[in-house]
Length: 102
Image (cartoon, rainbow, N blue to C red; front, side, top):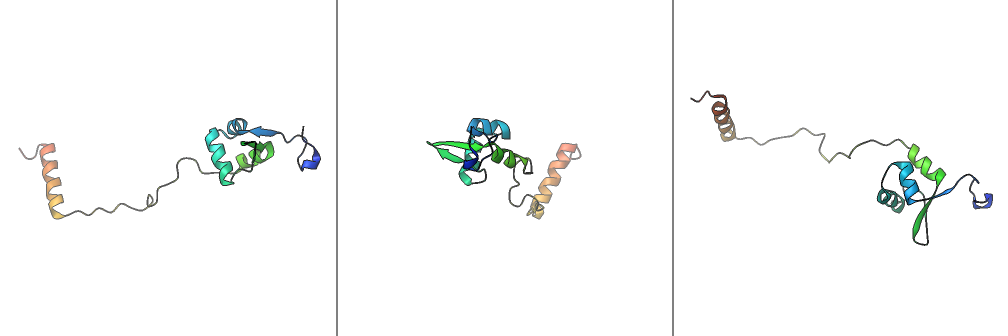
């Protein structure tokens, strides 16, 4: 049990990577990545990450967008460089497929 002198609440238990990952519903690798980047507050003790439960719960409560981040330019409309020859070729293919060319 932790003491109040540590600046911790007695109920604020320490968690390892596996427990933090379970609480956050992510992999252990992701927890280490977040901790290494400073986004998730933790400490390395004897080469292993440890986290205060309150810090992990606080991190979990931060709203985040779901899914993969958008690639740059994904919201921009696609621009195609089409030549007259491309249009003629496309029309010819459409005629063959639809049976009009017979």
